[in-house]
View 1: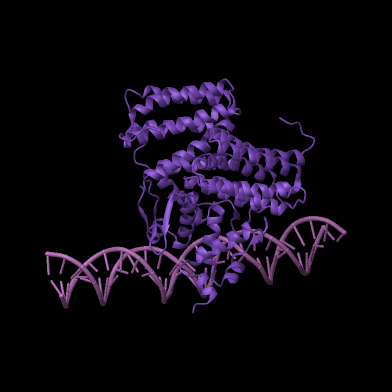
View 2: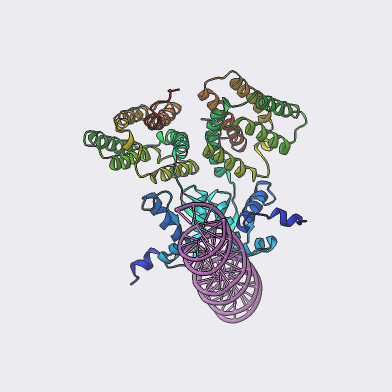
Length: 228
Length: 228
DNA sequence: CTGGCAAGAATCGTATACGATCTCTTCGCA
DNA sequence: TGCGAAGAGATCGTATACGATTCTTGCCAG
C-alpha cells in the first residue's frame, strides 16, 4: 500500500506540488502578507531542491500573490490600502461580469443554496464573527458566479478573492455595520436573478455591492474626507 | 565602452531577459501560436542555461501566453475559436472598465491624438490593409484606457491584447465591413468622453464596441446560425 | 503490406555546486 | 557616542550533470 505521502505527490511534478503548497498557505493566511519566502527553507520543508520552488514562486508572482526582488527574495504580497482598493475595484468589475454571465445558467438548486447561505449570514448578524461571516460571504458569491462559462473571467475572480484572503481581517471586522447592508443586498441580487432581470442590471448590482463594501472600508479609514 | 550586448543585458537577470525576449517574439508573432518552445534551444540562442528560461516560461504560462505540458514541453498558446471568444469577451469587460476609469483623466492632447488616429483609420477604409488597421486600432484604444489609475485592470487589458496579437490575421481580415462600423463607433466613444458622459455609459459603449467585433467574427464564421 | 515492439534520440525534471549579491554585525576611528 | 568600513553569514542566480519520460524510427512478425 502506498503511503499517504506518496499518494499526495502522485503524478504531480515537484514544481506543481510546491506551487499548491504555497498557494494553500497563502490563501489560508498561514503565511501572512509580508512573510518572507526563503527558497532553501521551503525546499527543505518539502524535501526537494530549490529549483522547483523557484518555478512555483515565479507563477505565484505572475498571479500577484507574491512579490519578488532580485537578489533579495520573495515575500507574500503586501496588501496595503491602495492594493486593497485596486483589488476590490477590479474584483467588482470581473465578479459582476462573471455573475451576469452565470445568472441565466443557475439552477433552482443553486439559487436555493445561495438563499440558504444568505439566511445563515442573516442569522449571524446579532452574534457577529467576522472570519465566519467572511467565509460564508465568499461562499454566497461563488455560488452565483460559478456557472460563468468564460474560464478567463472565472480565473480572474478567483485570483481576486485569493489575494484578498491574505488579509488577516476582512472589511467586516472594520465595519460591522456593513454586514447588515450586505445581507440585504444579497437578497436583492438573488431577486434580480430569480426574475431573470437584464444581465446588465444584475452585473451592476453585483459590482456595486462589492464597491459599497469598499466604500464602507474607506469611510471607516478616512472619516474626515469628503465623500465624492 | 560597453558593447551593445552588455548594455542590453545591464541590470536585468537572465531570467528577466529570457522573459522579455520570448514575450516580444510572441507579441510580434515571430513565434506563431502552436510553435514549440524547446528549452535547450532557447537557452542556446540567448547564451544562458535552461534554468532561467524555465522560469521565464512559467511566468508566460501564468499569463496565458504559453501552454505547458509536463515532460513534453511548452508551446505558444493556441488561440482556437473558443479561446478567441473568451478572450474578446473578457477584454471587452476589462477594457470597458479601464476606459471608463481613464476617461475623466484624459487630457485634451490625448483626445486629439485619439481623434487623429481614428482619422487615419478612416482614411484607410478604401485602401484596406488589415495588419496596419489592426495596429492603429489598438493604438486608438490604448490612448483611451492608458490613464486608468488601477494597475491591475491595466495589466489585464494588456494581457488580453497581447494574447490576441498572436493571431496571424485580425478580425478585420475576416470581416472587412466591420472596419467601417468600427471607425464610426470610435467617433461615438470619443464624443461620449468629450461630453463627460456618465462613466457607465462610456464603459458600455467601449465594451459593446468590442463585443460587436466579436459578433461580426462569429457571424462570418457561422453564417447559418440563428442570431440571438 | 501493416501493426506493434524495441532501441535510440530528443527533451524534460531536478539535484548539486559555486560564484555573486545583499544584509547584518562588528570593529575602529573621529 | 556616532558613523562608516570591513567581514561574515545568509540568500540568491545560474551552470552543469544526469536520471526520467516521451517521441521517433526502423525492424520484425503476422
